[in-house]
Length: 208
Image 1 (cartoon, helix red, strand yellow):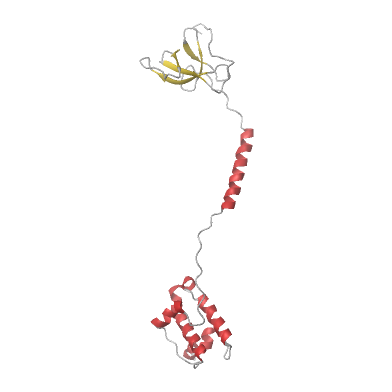
Image 2 (cartoon, rainbow, N blue to C red):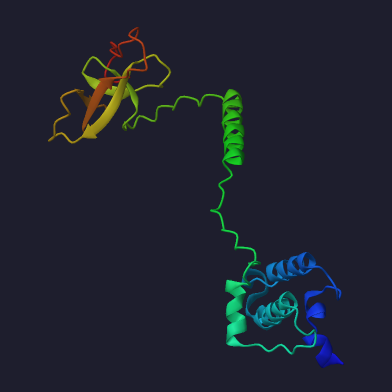
């Protein structure tokens, strides 16, 4: 009968009649592990109550036809377990592991790729003069003290640091020269990236 099958502690625990206490205990522990709240959720509470009652019956040597009921006490045994045969403890959840090894491998590959790519990238061409001075423009100084833009190819070591109006002053660490186009003062200094072989001072007519 269905009711008898559900109340049979052997069927509930999945053991044969006459099984040893060790077999009964192992079956109980296996079911307690399967029906743990982390795996079965709230739906397994009633089933676990039956398992607890069946295990108690077989441990005490009671009748195999004892009727099991889901009670609050049975549900509380989920955590307490039976004396002498506690359910397996909950495994602590470890912190998320950071894949340091993979990150280091990818970083090394990226560094190598950057170095290799740099070998094939040609140096950019020097900016061609457009006769409009701006910070970073390479210049030469004419005989009338005007600053004239030239290519940044190493022929001049003078670089415009800033441009100011005629009513302003250049910073102390720069030399003041008139913008050839009459746009203001060019604040010029020597570039540390260029050797001392070129001074940037030329003797050219103002009209060139």
